[in-house]
Amino acid sequence: MGRFDMGLTEIEKEAITSSFSLINHQEQHFATIFYDCLFDMAPLIKPMFKRDRKLIEEHFYMIFCAAVDNIHHLDTIRTILLELGARHRNYGVKVLHFPIVKSALILAIQHELKGQSNASIENAWSHYYDVLAAIILEGMQEEKIA
Image (tube, rainbow, N blue to C red; front, side):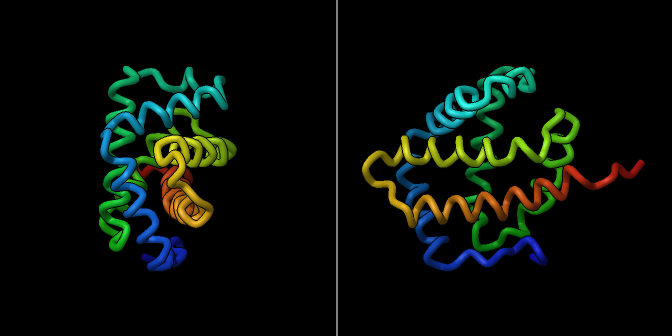
């Protein structure tokens, strides 16, 4: 995986996959909660989302599921994440948006897990977000090849 494989531990991977099975029971409900958190925290970001919210949520959830499904083989989705970064650059996403998105993700996870959330689950997700965000940022920073 290279320099962005920041070495999630097996315990972190297990915390992510087991908590995801709890989050995943209502399918896209999680995406709705995530975007509610994001837009509540950073209302100035909302105009960047020009497509139908349902489509945005579906796309987010598809990427979210792919990230969990490929947690043991991140290289499988590396190209998808790099392309996501390039699209985010075109949408006007800035590096300073990433911590806000991370906070919204953790809040959505806490909301969905309710009393079952704990520091080790949240730290595992936080670490995995950093790994994924590093690849997305790499895609944002790559020059377009004509």
